[in-house]
Amino acid sequence: SLRGMETQDETRQDLIESAVREADGLLATFNALLRIARIEAEARREGFAEVELQSVLHDVCELYAPVAEEKGLAFKPPEVASLKIRGDRDLLFQMLANLLDNAVKHTPGGGRITITFHAASHRLSICDSGPGIPESEREKVFQRFYRLDRSRSSAGSGLGLSLVAVVAKLHGITVSLADNAPGLCVNLNLPG
Image: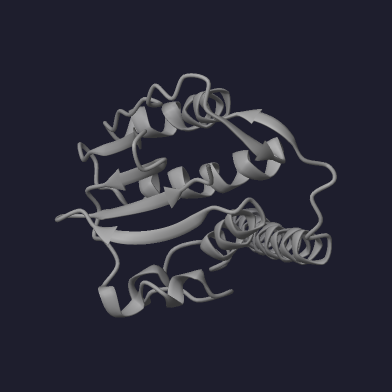
């Protein structure tokens, strides 16, 4: 029957869309792996230039603002006037984007995300009011493909924080995780 054919077509269409989504996910994973490999292999800094961190933070916040607004989350870049860091702007952008993406993804609707800069200690913090990461797992989340049990059902490759760790190391930035009760704080101790 005609109706049966339509249903078959819809099922086929669903399968195709599902396969395309899966392929996209795999491609994103491969790209992230390639990026990490390239950063590690090239761990050389001749392409580094003075990067204005305020401008990078502003662009990252602008990128995530619409998604955050949908969840009733608001955040703004801190004032870090004339804070310059020697580095690769694209990589620093990617690092901060990964951190903000995690914060937006894991913070419940109406929750809180704060981005602060502590001038005295040269520390940039991105804090959220999400479920946090148990202390026993905080070192492991920087390993490639490591995912917390509760994250296994959601999309993701487990590469986000390992990319953050590699970019941070390349730029002389120390990354540490702390409890935000509730939630998580990612602290970036900047050089200088």
